[in-house]
Length: 238
Ligand SMILES: [Zn+2]
Image (tube, rainbow, N blue to C red; front, side):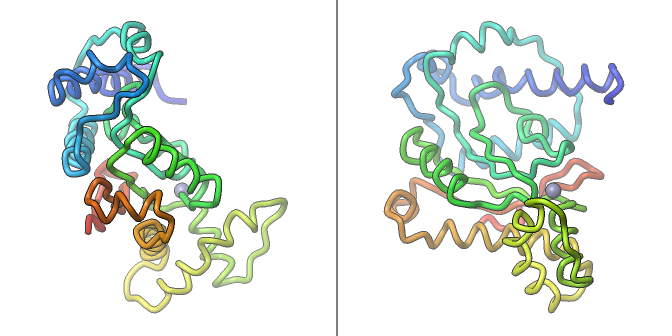
């Protein structure tokens, strides 16, 4: 349970984002009611907006009183998110909060271990093709429980009940690769898990991703969120 003062502060950080984004793209709000309108941000501008939001999240000093009801109504007829975030379901890693973004700005796909299966791939492709999103961020995080479970499979032949084993399976190759590196195995595996997904998306043979990537209309980047200091490490921008 988050104590009330912190909760209020997080909400204020999150809700100041739409106003900040409006400064960045002054006419975006005006066009938000048109379902066909895509974001006007390039991939580089989208990445800069996320970096700026994470800085504001870390400082947590920004206050704003944006009218969420008004914002909700302004985007009800159509969305124009500027980034896809593939993140872990971990309750400490909510993309809208840690990037200080508001309603209608991020197209978020979450599962434990931020892996990308067919459904997630289709969701990414929908966002890119149909919503015109120029940036995909694959976001791992420190001390990820799903990656830790994959480490346990590799190191201790751990077996998990229900469908958890299948959920962890796609992360195992990342752990095997990370085993060869020096340093902390879990953190190396977190990064390798992100790296593999980023590379898979970047090298997709499907025109729906390949074409915008080759045309420079789409970027796919990898990052890792630090639970301790709130900072996002953009370790795989290119
Ligand atoms: Zn996790």
